[in-house]
Length: 114
Length: 115
Image (cartoon, rainbow over all chains, first blue to last red; front, side, top):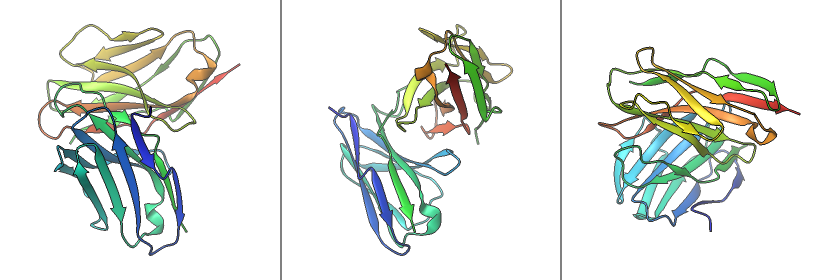
């Protein structure tokens, strides 16, 4: 049983296209995140949702739109893809936001924009 | 804003040796959490160890231990009796207790264990 699952794992697309990455967790967590890992392996948070409410929204282009239909799902939609969007996108979840609650990460989705 | 710095982009040791990965951070907060995550070639992010800043005792998990120096804002990871499976990227991360609950990561250290 995969705790945090992301689909697709790999995505190759052309500039200008719109794409989505889906994330689901079966841990009963109420907080979910999207992180971006660039080509230099640097990890940076993009968004966080707690019980379907957006609580963290870093400086991310508005071409990126997260959607959380319920607390077990957090999807990432990207419009008008650009070369610089090529990265690995990680979904993660945690139980609440307080304390040393550990994030459980998905396996990542590698997006390549040509 | 908090920053986390890992000054060693790459390290390489022989199997069974002990290796220490460095991490420093900058914060004005007095209470916070620190973590080490491992990312093997499979790309999966795996928690290695965590430390609460209000605890003076250094955290230990089997062959992994930390040296937490709060005054110096240093949080190094020691891997004893290193194994081939320890080959991975290692990320140090900081998390506030108050305010935005997000992990701030360092740049990572690529560790290679040689047979």
